[in-house]
Image 1 (cartoon, one colour):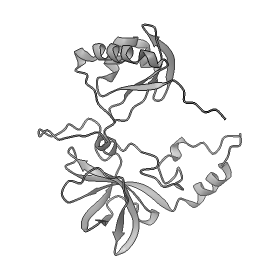
Image 2 (cartoon, rainbow, N blue to C red):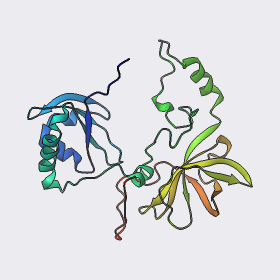
Image 3 (tube, rainbow, N blue to C red):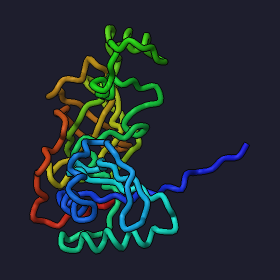
Image 4 (cartoon, rainbow, N blue to C red):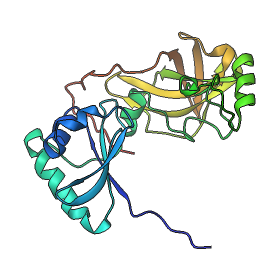
Length: 243
């Protein structure tokens, strides 16, 4: 059997001025794109698919290049168009994804997680007439409720390094779940993360203990998003390393 990968390479333009950059490249029609909508187009003969999406709470666009030989051309065109707006190279930012409560499947969830515990049930339509795989099971789960819930958390202590290794959570000495992803938020000025906990302990304001090896922290369940969009960075220059 022959396998292959499509000749498509993504280039993302993200941040508060991404819309201005993309308008300067393609025109006002890009404002018609809603989140995760896309359109096949070209840029001065460079074939691509333009999609409105992004890794940050600021939003942005992704350009899927359909001809690998034109990569340098596309990069230079985007770079030139972004110069008036202070564009610069970057990568997905781990801390910002936590601050904006952007889910990472497989990091924040388990292999057997369901859409209800991950907060994705708003994307389900269980009343549609057609059948699909898992419909009956999802309907049953909607009635019974998930046994876990993904929640936002903050916890004390010195700033922790970005982490995606489970840290156990305890309440009254009982293990009730684990922190799935964690890092230090310079905007919140505290350690933050996502945790999967037993649904009986999912309420905002619940106090817990989290253990990381020899270290122990006190934490609290908070609401999503952990940091409100538009919250500026503090005056101190923090190292916002991409993961």
